[in-house]
Length: 221
Image (cartoon, rainbow, N blue to C red; front, side, top):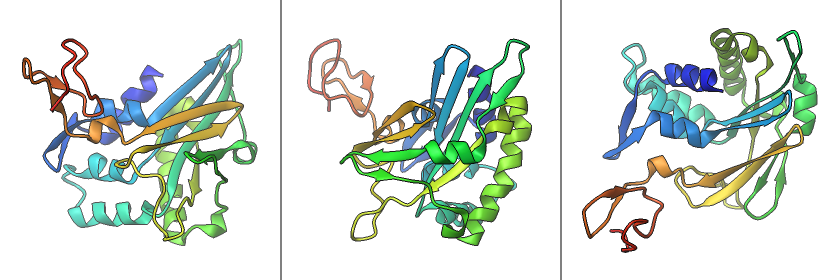
């Protein structure tokens, strides 16, 4: 798990990102959007890739123009993009992966109202999104080594009646990704994207989702 966190952080390529004057710590960001489950020799993994990920990942890259960053973000903005993995670690240290179709058959998302959603088939997403995801897949596989061979991408369309995304990293809520007999629950908004609060007693900086100082009991400002 530590290796995966390091590799994904390497994919991002820098330690922090200022978004609307909020300094986003990349390690904190990754911790909030990826969840591991381990039971015996079985390991399952879910990596939710929000739209903000692409700006954070590519914003300061000298080889990527701001226009291209906006292009990638716009490609995925209508979808919930999930990277999933399920594997068994064998006694000889090799890994056996759940096949893409078997994982697809088991994966779903449950929104905060208990509604179930299932992954779109390839012909239900745009050709541009499909081609971009195909180009990302070998990159993950190559950089993650043996473990990357078992990672698969899935897209969901989760919108309200007005066509707005129900799952948004900036909006209060929650959702659960289910696959491989595990539940992966995500809380929203992502704490690392919130402006920090301060304790009125000593001015200490606190997490943006906290209401009271855990040390003094004072309401945060």
